[in-house]
Image (cartoon, rainbow over all chains, first blue to last red; front, side):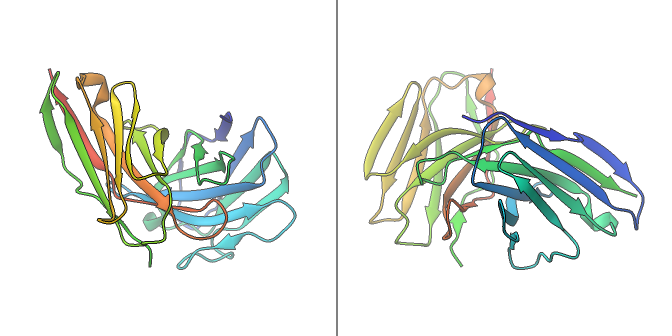
Length: 115
Length: 111
């Protein structure tokens, strides 16, 4: 399994500002994923980040709102831009577990509150 | 839209009992299924995966897959209060390594 360091673990932000979340993995991985988990809800995939190419966004998520960087095989960032209270959520990064089976390992998550 | 359906619970069982968690899925082409456990305030962690029809056992956990009925279950024997968590069912959703998660079933094991 991979060890994933995600930071910040939590933040309280003002409306209209942006927050960048970082995800560092202890080994090289091809695919990294960014999820949102709203209170009482399951995980919703925001985008898939593949090193060296543009991130692939899921329906309902756009690059202007959630820009993603993937500069190398061990690191990615997600920015939540122009935040509103509706962006208050837990944001999680994950990496593929290998074997082609869809196993994923998660970072500890970032708990975001927007005032 | 490929879906994974779970009852959100809570499911309450007494300590020592068998907890049965269920999941249905819409994509008949799905070949593999995953159970993740998420403690309150924590991130999900993989506890079981199953690829073949039938049962797969790992300690106190047994995953069951019935592809004809599009049904996956997780049995937890001798439930402990430390098993109290939300259990997420997941299945591949198309695209390399992508998975779709169910809403999760909250399990409460009562001492």
